[in-house]
Amino acid sequence: MKKVRLKHLLLLLPLVVFGCYEDIDDNPITDTEIKDFIWKGLNLWYYWQDNVLDLADDRFSDNTAYTQFLNNYNAPNTLFDALLSTEDRFSWIVDDYFALNNALNGVSKSNGMEFGVGNITVGSETTFGAVIQYILPNTSASSSNLQRGDIFLTVNGTQLTESNYRSLLFSNTDTYTIGLAEIDSSNTLVLTGETVTLTKQVYEENPILLANTFTVDGIKVGYLMYNRFTSNFDQQLNDVFGQFLAEGVQQLVLDLRYNPGGSVNTAINLSSMIAGQPTTELFLKQRWNNKIQAAFTDEEISKYFASQLTDGTPINTLNLNKVYILAQKSSASASELVINCLKPYVDVVHIGGATRGKNEFSITLYDSPNCAYSCTASINPNHTWAMQPIVGKSENANGFFEYEAGLEPTFTLNETISNYGVLGQQDEPLLARAIQHLTGNGRFDNTPQVNSDFNVIKNSNTQTLTKDNMYLEPEDLPNVFK
Image (cartoon, rainbow, N blue to C red):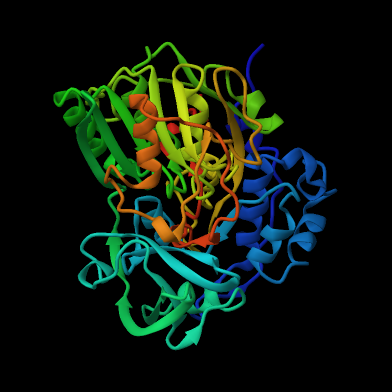
């Protein structure tokens, strides 16, 4: 049977007439054409399209009814929110796709201080505050005395609370001053009086924060702290594995504890660097909505291990049959994809905590119907709105994909502010636990630690436009015009 291709599905979408809308710069743009893009893009691609009544193919009797429906909403983002499924936790829309594209490439404003925000318990007292997790190089924070494990409780002199931390830390303000705190000799969390002023700048983050090797009990161990799946740095990632190979690495500890996700293709490349499976071995299979699933062939929704990068560079692979992965609640989407899709092929020893539970992927949709809204060719010049809707889920080679509650660790070990340790050093608690296991030294049990002294509710590195998103890049999409 001949497949129904997406270009034919586009012909079934409603026509529309246009109204007028004033944007925040008072430049006239057509409000209804933005809403038309939103509805049509979601009607075609959205994972839950079948279950949202207002996105049904036969929802409107004619063009007039369709236009009236769009204009019932006072703004594009209001319509977008109204069309989302109650199951959807991660789709979003932006009014500036230039900023979104930069963020997808790892470019955003940053002061270099990455931190968690939440409830800090010291003794019998609980205080809302923040703890620094790591510092990015060549930033405002790196030129200060701040370091991992530092606690701060105030911003611009105001005490952090669950209701104000977003406006104080994640607003458009480029400069703010934090007030540091410490645990004193009476086991009480108190302000020290020390403040640090930080300024954000446009910054391209290299996701490879740390990469080193060391020998313990005669075993050459590679350690990689990788903080986002950014395809612009795939070559540097491959170079790290080339160095691991040159140094004879026998065991790998992959630190994804703060990695919120990113590119699916980069996740495939990283997994291929670890496992070195043949390119005939299935890495993942995609699940789309019924409309898209019918338009794609089985081969188009199947992704395999890779032997080379996009530019043809051969992948350096360790060919491991076991990997140690440090992951916790702040590990999401593409990080979870690596864990889940490696499991059918290698022994994945997951140390830390349960992960985020984001098993869906998205694509960027632009107002460009000539390419099924999936590229910037022939894009509507009248506005810069774009969507990042969830369009599918990925299953591993065993067909498993249902981990909305997160992937459970092999061995549970929580980070504690009383002993954060220095990332990459052998005595850092999570890395030390991995070393203990891979060398077989000491008793290694799976007794969950309770009463963690820092309950993180938000991580700073999920506050960029990319959030904890896992996405397909345009070149990774099946050819929609075959």
